[in-house]
Length: 187
Image (cartoon, rainbow, N blue to C red):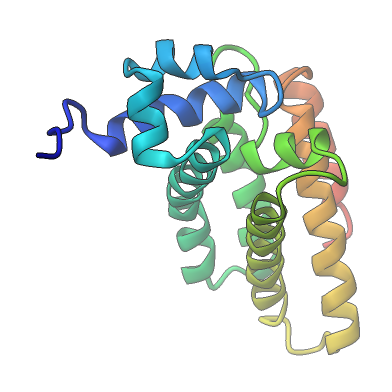
């Protein structure tokens, strides 16, 4: 007879997501996950397979949360102004204290190497491509811009978002505001 789970998966994954977000993938150990999630190693392995499985579920949880912001941007008819608003809203999304936690996707991309689990690399790549496409769709609202320029600008904004994601961890609000204002200075 199978044992009944004594926990709610969504709740323990949210706890794991916050741990990975705060400490990074590499630094987060199984012992840390056990303690934070409030379940034992056997339950973790039984439900999620291993640390990578927990992490992949954590990324899903994270992207659901971030998709609330992205959905607002997708629905926006404000073009580049909507993207700028998204950048500011992202800063608030990352807040934990005075500083933010960055972006779980960006933080992970910054720390994993070539030998990383292919599933993790695939999830990160797919998510960043989705964000880039949202930016491109907003840029297409300016009918005077050609497709090549849109692609270049979407890449620029995606890379700028990566920079902002990392910067939220150590820079002040004023510095972050200056960064965003300079990104969008000519728009």
